[in-house]
Amino acid sequence: MKKRLVAPLIGLVIAFALPTYAQQKDLADPQTTQKILALIEALNLAQNNNDAAAVAAFFTRDGVFVTLEGPIIGRQAIQKWFTDVYQWWHPKNSIHKVDGNVVHSIGTAGNELWATGEWSETGQGKTGEPIPIKGHWFFIFVREADDWKVRVTGGNVTLDSVILINKSFAPQPAATPSPTASPGTLPTYAQQKDVADPQTTQKVFASFKGWDEAFNNYDTAAIAAFYTRDSVFVTTGGPIIGREAIQRWYADLLQRVAPKTASVRWTGMPFT
Image (cartoon, rainbow, N blue to C red; front, side, top):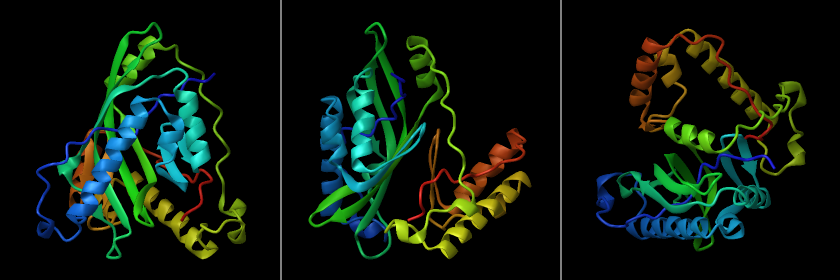
């Protein structure tokens, strides 16, 4: 069985000292914030119980879990992914720290939320030794009736965590990457209800191409222009929030490295 490095979802959140609701326009109201913190705490319990079905139940039917191997799409696929993971990795003491204990609203309708933070947990190595790992995560939640579900989540793992995993588990051969879809092989608009129309999809592809060009030209202002004013860019050092901060991050990066031929590719996931 191919062993996967799990970027875990779940954590125990201490829900106190929340910012005043009126301090920021994009903050979720206190009652909603408490619901999200309670949801994350329940997800943590499911993770510590190694209960793949319980973890998957927190996702929407078409939820997306962005793993280090690529996106896992749909509640059933997510459950299978965790079922496979729990056969070799048994996480305990999972903790998520929500940045500032703050949950943000998306738009004005109040039906979508986002949050970022740090995570940590301890698993068992190949011979049963404890392996503490950590990283950063993001969540996008959507309202379903009176409940909230995870629509998209993902995260990263710190380099020292990867080293600990690799020391215990023998590296596995890299999987053969799936062929990258091209504009000529886009999914038919009528095939899926949540697929963007062809014109919008082509605009997104053009945006990717523009980002590639800006990055290869080391044009940090042009790179930052692709983000919204209050965008969130989750890096291995934590989330970078806001267009200006993102531009500074890229400026610092490009002073230290000189990348070429950057390319953002679509992996077959529809734009929604």
